[in-house]
Image 1 (cartoon, protein in one colour):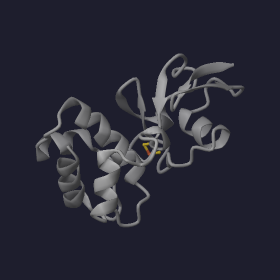
Image 2 (cartoon, protein in one colour):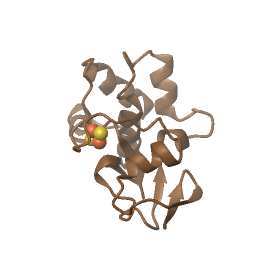
Image 3 (tube, rainbow, N blue to C red):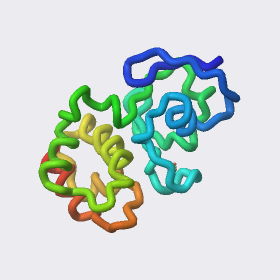
Length: 146
Ligand code: FES
């Protein structure tokens, strides 16, 4: 049995320890805001926060998450009131929206490190793929949220 904390709640998964965290979150915890895109660590749709760092949950086994603190998009704020969520909603930043939870989780880790990131810092930190190509809008929104 694997134990860790998800969105400030203790969880135990009776699953193969090699199960990717992405699937434990989605299938066992019904936290479907964390998305599946590629399964190979490339797209970033599955990004969650583990102990303060943005991590691609398809590349982390639940065994590797043992004892850690995991935050998903559902746990980022109790009322969707995180500045990133407010700016993304108010400014209609998303297009199809599929990549946005992962982008917001990566951006929230970035904004904890620096509240005024440059375009270059954003590009280095937010390597998530957006098939709608809204990258310029993402940069502006992250800077406003900071
Ligand atoms: Fe994890 Fe694409 S689904 S990086």
